[in-house]
Length: 151
Image 1 (cartoon, rainbow, N blue to C red):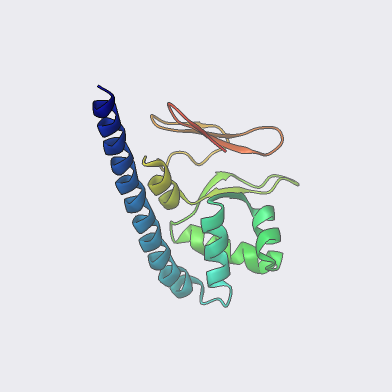
Image 2: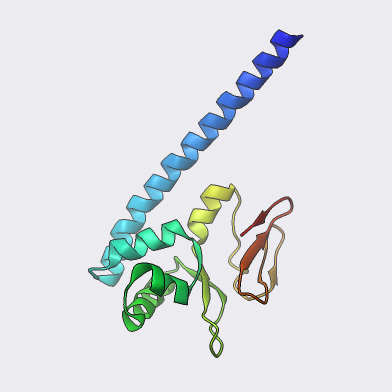
């Protein structure tokens, strides 16, 4: 019996390792694809810096993005707009007064979470069959799935 449990445990570990390896390969492929796309879309010297920031934090406030990248606000907002208009970023919450907009890069979340982030999830409080995306009063973004909370 103990040997059978060890065998099942090893099979589960192998299965998880294969799944994780596939996710890493998918993320690397997505990064390469987006590197070419963002360079072609923006023609910016900051393209790789922008891509790295988006991959490091796929759900972000525009103000945090500006701080993290060190790109001027005007340039950063223009670059984000171009990427958003290409369909790769989605708005979770529009900027309002002093509150920064919150953007999400669903393609990366789709890989890491193993679920499809629906396009309907663009507003501050949005529900669909798989996700509910909202921000709390402190501006933290949460994605609720049927089993997980992602912050």
